[in-house]
Image (cartoon, rainbow over all chains, first blue to last red; front, side, top):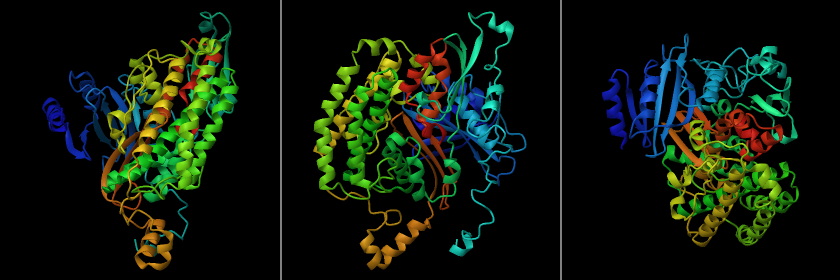
Length: 166
Length: 411
């Protein structure tokens, strides 16, 4: 069971317009999919007789402000413990309506991971049983990991990149 | 804050009258934490109780959230090591070295064999320190104080070994990209050998006191159990998963830092209860000792760091005499060196399970995105299921045996 086999199988099952962006990063297969495919795709990978991606290692958000219409991303890290193969699945949604179906019904572990992605990136997981902030305070009204919130005081003058020739 | 949390969930809080008919007593809401001594960290459990039985519970975490992932987006790779220290602070060398290995994977740095063995020794010492705390505090939570005092002295000895290598004790910032910052001194070797010869006696003493103790067994067997299937679904890793009977250990499955050179067993339990978690951690300490012994016996000669001048700080004497060394020193300390473009995931077997680092680099000085996979955060969400229907005192030892570290929970 190699990365090429998995990629080929997924493309033949879901089609090239649903499974794209197939790359291998340091031996780890990455595929990109669309919002409407993610749940069937994960169910397929979970129930597949040989792949058996039954362990959700991690789930996290990411923000690309310059990618118009695909600003927010969700990154799923799956692990097939039987075959010891990892797989990363990505999907992107527009920032105006960042709605992604929940996968808590398939993986109980996704509960807090999705809450964290909601908390930090504002990604709305449709069907999540208890989607509310987890690490930040409940009365916070923004999503702090988005790139528009600078880390440091914007009025600070001593760390301007130009001064360092950057 | 706590007021908001109290009313925010429909599952907990003041029970409605028609609901309470099913229960023996009137339901009460009990706040366990945020600053309760038995939680060993700052997090809150809001328990709904029928008499002494827990009907439902909800966790509030994030009291010591320090925004590490956001801070990391402003820091050069070199300066992120200190953030990793503060996650699982009971075994910070493992966090440091996991992060170093992630960056080395991105940069393509080959680490010399001696440095890899030194890392293994330090990581296994850290694992022992982590498990000592968890197991002995579990004994304290069941009422046995003496065993804790017996083994805690040995954590002190481990910290002294850290001091020999990096000068720090708790938040170690140990190692560099490409290897270790200094070689083992004669004193460090003496201390490790002393630890290897003397610690087994203390551990044996501790185990003889607790392991077959009638009271301890009655308190822990069958308490807070979870099946292997549920544990996998909840994303358990590390000793807690192995206690449920699944032999997933990152060291054995995806060996890093020369773990394939060593012979060790992966202990597993059967029922996943508190007693099994205790036994698995106990046995892992013996296996760690075995690994350290093998690494010390076969410690290769040679350099203790890679030749990676862009990332490995030059010796301080050179900085004062040598132009290149001064330039590199400045560039590294000021974080002037761009990282290559790439996405890398690396995981190590931390004290609590698979500690993963997902690093997205866009070619800048800092990570574009850095995601920590903290084992604690992921398995702690199973806690309500594990304590449902048990008593308050059982919930406390269940939490204690899961080894929930607030620093790792909240990043």
